[in-house]
Every structure is written in structure tokens, then in C-alpha cells.
Picture 1 (cartoon, helix red, strand yellow):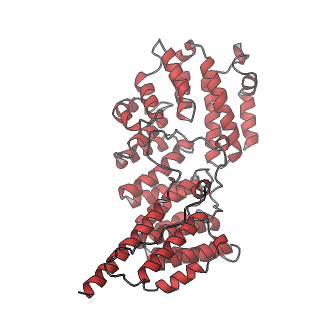
Picture 2 (tube, one colour; picture 1 turned 30 degrees about the horizontal axis):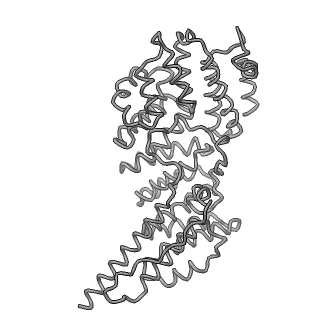
Amino acid sequence: MLKRLCTILAASALAAPLALGPARASGKEELTPYKMIRSLQYVQDSVVLGDHSAIEMQRFMLGAIDERLRAADPSAFRDPRNVDAALVYVMSGGNPATLDLLADRDIEGNFDSRVTEALRHYLNGKGPLIVENLTKAAPEYKNSRIGPYLFLILGNAMSQQDPVEAMKHYDWARLTAPGTIIEEAALRRSVSLAARAGLPEKGFRYALNYARRYLTSPYASQFADVFVELAVAHFDEAADGRVSEILSFMDSARQREVYLRVARRAAIAGNQALARLASRRAEELAGDDSSRSQVLASFYEGLAAVPSADVFSAAEALEAIPDEKLSPRDRALREAAKAVADAVVRPPLGESPAQAPGPIAERPAGEQSELVAEESGSGMSPFGQPFEGSSDRPTEMPAEAGTAEADIAAPGDPVLEGFLASGRSKIDEIDALLKREGQ
């Protein structure tokens, strides 16, 4: 794949002007922006199709295009293709300040002010402000080069206000840009919105399309998280069949990881039946070559049993798991489960309200970066390793500024907090029953 990239860049004469830089390139050697953008699009599409070696090329090209756009004579933007190139660049993770510069220089009206203003607001984190104006302007660009990008951004901007309408914009974006980073992003985000909107059938269709095409994308781990959210929130007999169909496109390691994430999420949500089912399937897929996965499957199954009548056995099973087999996030979760179990079996202390679980040990400094990448606790996700530096991280497309979609975990652990809240609720119910019996 990388060899093909080099061939294309050489054939397009990109290598020479990029090596020389805009200041030294001149005349026919100087590539027009729209030709450079074509190469960037090819590189970004290659990344989501599995060629992770192209990530560094993507970073380099974004920098080179930025220099070229800033050095371009304003007359170059009389060509609509170069205007589109500048807009695609900034929607592809480019420098927002470059768009400000080009828009301020535009005295001939080559840039559509409605689009540039919308993008400037969006990239400054004011996504909801652009919905009305961009809803009116975007249809005019449906069949243009920037159309898929604008509809993806419009979907991002309205995803919190109207997820159903946002999915329609994602549909248009992905159907007009098949096999690209645009389609990958639209499908992945549509799964999340379908789960939130209570439309599981649509969500499973989106997930199936994603699994067929983009499991090697560097964003596939984010897809796994939203797919798990969808499966846990809407799991029944029919959904079980759809989940199995989607997982059939994954190898056993990815299937096992998904089931571990389902087991963890279901255990915390109090869905004991699903937690046990997912844990058993993860154990079956682990075989003899992944003792840690088997331990995690047993751990989540034991976690689900804490609120049940078998609380003593569950607590003993959790205590028997060595610390080194669990991630910091799952060790904190085990402490929470033990605290809940202790409170459930502790005799009531008169009218004292002190039935809440004991404090959980604070997380050591510096562990947050590890927790971000360990939703299942496996620490060895087959969906890809976390990116250790911003310079190596692939550029999201278009940039997600202005949306409330969180692809990275918040500083706290919301699922742990949910588990504690659920445990406290059960303890309160038990206290109320004991109090009524004593009257």
C-alpha cells in the first residue's frame, strides 16, 4: 500500500514541490492546491482501510498543504477547485487559522461566506450555532466535491439536538462518498446515534456495514464501544442473532474483546443474564491461548452475581482474582463490588444511614491515560493499540470540534459510578424492607 502511495505521489509530481517547499517552488513545478488535496484524500482513505503506515504521510501532507494554501496568490482561488480544496483541507483536520486567513483575504467573493462562517463557528466549538444556516446552504452543495464533508459536519452539529435527522445527513454523506474516511466516520457515528435514539434495528444495520468494511480502521475500537452500547441497551433474542451476524465478520480475538466489553457493561448495568451469557461466550472464544481473557470473563460473571442471592460466593470469587490480571480500572471496579457486597450482608445498624459502600482507593497519578484505552479491562485490544503521541494519531475526519460525542473517556469512570449508584439503591431497598419488618 505504501509503495502505491509513493508511486501516486511521484506520478503526480507531488514529491518535488513538497520537498522544495512553497517558497522555492515556482512556475510549473508548483502544484495547485486541488491536486495536493487529491493525494491527501487518498492517504486518509488508505488509513481507514487498514494502511496505518500512511498515518505519518497524512501528517506530513497536512503540513505541506497548509504552507501551499498560505502562500497561494488570491487569484488562484478564482478556480472553484482550489476553493473546494481549501475547504476540504480544513475539514480534514487542517489548521483552522488557515481558513481564517484565506477568508479574510478573499475580496473577490470566491469563498461562500455562509460555508466559511459555518466552518469557523464549528471549528471553534460552536457547532449548534451553525445548524440553521448550514441546513439552508448544504443542499446547494449536494453534488459538489465538498458535499459529503458538509453533510457529515451538519450531522455532527445536530447530533445532540436531533439524532434522527443527524443520521439522515450521515446517510447522505456516506452514500455519496463510499469507501472513504467519510463513510467510515458516518457509519461509526450512526451506530451511536441509533442506540441513543432507541432505533436498534437501524443501529445493527449500520454496525453490519461497518464490520464488513472498516474493522482495520484505527477508529475501530471506538466502533466497538458504541456497538457494545447498542447491544447492551437493546439486547433480546432477535438482537442476539444480529450481534452474532455482525461478529461473524470478526476474527476470534475481536469477537472475544466485544463479548468482554458487553459482559463488563452488562454487569455494571445489573443485567445478570446478559453478563453471564457474554462471559461464557468470551470464555469459549478464549480457548487455551488466552488465560487473561478467561480470568476477565469469570470476573465479569462474578461481578454480575454480586446483587444476587449468591453474593457470598461471588465476593469470594472476585477476591480470588490476582491483581495483576486486572487493569487499574477493573481493580477499582472490584473494590466497588466488594464494598457493595459487604454492605448488602452487613447487619443493619439501627437507624444509622451509614450503609453506603466504603471509599474506593484513589487512582494513582498518571493512570488516566491507561484507563482511556481499557474499556474491557483486557489491555490487549485487537482493535488497535492506543496512539501514544499526537504526532502519530490519525486525523479525525472531519474534525469533531463542536460536538458532544466523546470518543475518549472522561476523567472519572461513569460506569463505575453507575455501579456504585446501583449498589446503593439496592442497599436502600434492603434497609427499607428490614425497617418495615421490624415495625
